[in-house]
Length: 430
Ligand SMILES: *Cc1c(COP(=O)(O)O)cnc(C)c1O
Image 1 (tube, protein in one colour):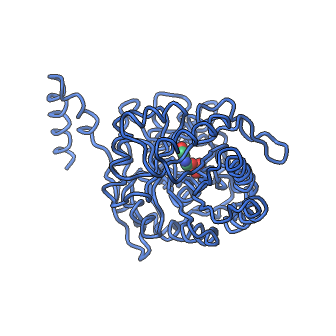
Image 2 (cartoon, protein in one colour):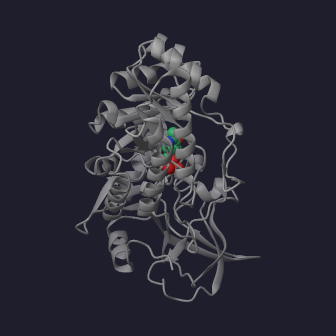
Image 3 (cartoon, helix red, strand yellow):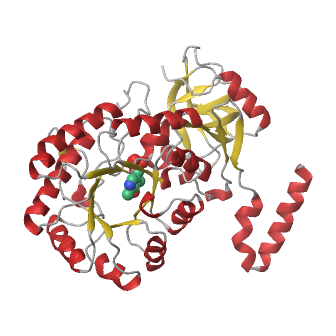
């Protein structure tokens, strides 16, 4: 059975002090996972996890991960700004972007970030806008990737990376232009629930490192396994054991890199989902119950707070706080309020009877949850709260207000009027 990280008493206490909906994060869980990850790769001297900021760009979360020794993986201007504000410097920042604007390369260079190039043509582009740094990484797209003879993803359809031939030419060109330390990166499958993904990816990248050494004489300094390690969203799924994954990657190193004299190569990862996913949940209240051709429960949260079910049909486990042990003898669609029929957190889900006012816990929203929020239908994104290791709760992002939504209209005469209306409504509410 899948239980929320916070019990009924805790959720009720928090909801009494903070209006629903909100995303709640579990500091203890985040720290435990970060420690397990660092322990799993401790055999590799240069190992670092660069947390994928896009999964959860809250600076308070990044600060926790920084304390646990993680770096950050950024892919946009504002993510680089977060890295700077948090005090990440130099090689603690990976910049893995694509279709990159010049100003972002300039900023990444200023911060001394490791730039992970997405394309052969970016070598010239980077040289012209920001210069070639001493340390540089290139992203590989092998065009084909299979695991246990099952094709898990089709890199040939993916927009990312260099081909193998482009890697050979690219690393040689980068060396001519002054680069001295080289890294190789690939991200080939998402949310993998198997211990085999990282080891298979590592084998591919290790073999490519050996090939590059033979072809160009370049000895890579590091290999970046990127993200893609999954979490059990469904109750019947089993969690990945990161310790076992680390041990299998080590075997691959012993078999492939060690004989080629490359055993000292550093490893890094850019996990987002695995680091944070299970350590967040979206807490919402049941506002309405509706019976037509099916039974619906309408929440005060909507897809603007959590988009994955609406856009990918993604499964998020749901429990009714305080009713975790009751039989799931009802079937509901759990919906948000968007004027979009795909705004459903669950379809035909067996749950205990839900009454108005019940607190609904939508699990595993710590990664790619609040971060993917948007404002369609004029919906305002929810707050973020941190359940700290001492049991206290801290607001780490307030909910959006109408003024936030109207702020970019300040260029028109209506902007002022709208903000006036928003301000009056707020004063009345207070
Ligand atoms: C999204 C992303 C990640 C994180 O992926 P997860 O599946 O959340 O682990 C890592 N690296 C890059 C370049 C990404 O785009």
